[in-house]
Every structure is written in C-alpha cells, then in structure tokens.
Length: 206
Image (cartoon, rainbow, N blue to C red; front, side, top):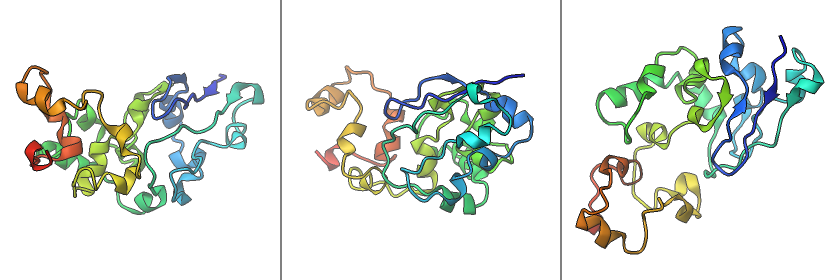
C-alpha cells in the first residue's frame, strides 16, 4: 500500500493539516527516533527534525515523498537531547492534571498520558493521528509543570527570547485593565494562568 508523506509545517507556529498517518506507522512498531533521527542529538530550536528523504525511501517510492522546510516556532531555546535523557514525563504531567496544578484547561490530554512511548508524553494523540496538525505539539502548560517559576514578563524571555509581544492574546489591548475589570469581556480566567500563574494580581504590575 502506498502512503503519501506530505508534511505541511509552514505558516508560523500554526501547522496546516496534511495527510500523514502517524497512527499507521506506530502500528508497525516503528520507533519515533527511527524516522526523526536528528531528535536524539538536537540541542537547538532551529534544528530540522523532520525525517530525511532517504529514511522515507526505505519504504516509499520517491514520487510519494514530499518533505517541506520545518515550521517556524516562537521559542528560542529547547533541547530534545536533554529531554530525551530524562525518564518518561507523562506521569509527571498526568499528576499535575490530577492535582489541578496544570495551568490551562487540559481538554482530553489526560487520556493520552499512559503511553510507554517517551515522545508521546509531549507529542500526544499520534497513535490516532492520520494528519499532521498542531494538536500533537506540546502545550506551554506541559513545560510549566517542571519549569514553574513564572515571573511574567521576565521569565517569558527564558524560552521565547526578547520578542514576547507576539505572545500576547488579541484581547490584550491598551485598555485591557479597564475592560477586564468591568466584567463585560466575559474572559475565561482559567486561561490566564498559563502565562501569569495562579497567584498573580493584575494590580501588582499595573
């Protein structure tokens, strides 16, 4: 059976859905690092961790394979090598969700945190995925389970560099303090914790 490998990972941090079945490849008991060979030694965000074409050609015809440039991301520091040296962090993230310490609404994340596959602790849902989308990318709340010293905006620069203005939600307009305190925006305050932590007070900064 021919399988098209076409990963559309362009357009900033958002990923365009593209046909590629991680589900089928994981059913064949393939290891993640067997295809994503550069991940184990990667210490920089800008490393290209998509499979190299010769890896795909071990099973696929050349005409079936399309591999674009890697996507742009909004972080400046991350080491896959360092994280792969650690034990599976899925139980740690699961415990944070169970204790209500996870800093954003978890959705269906919890049900994916039983896999023995270390990569799937952060890249979740791949065993069900027939398309490449941003759904399988780690959430910032995952990182904050361990990297939990939140001092917004200063701690943001640790991972996102100096260009943190692009991280602000669209509703963070110059008049946010007035519109926020009026109660008219109907903001879901549970979403604030991922950037501000659970103990922040707006007037501590304003």
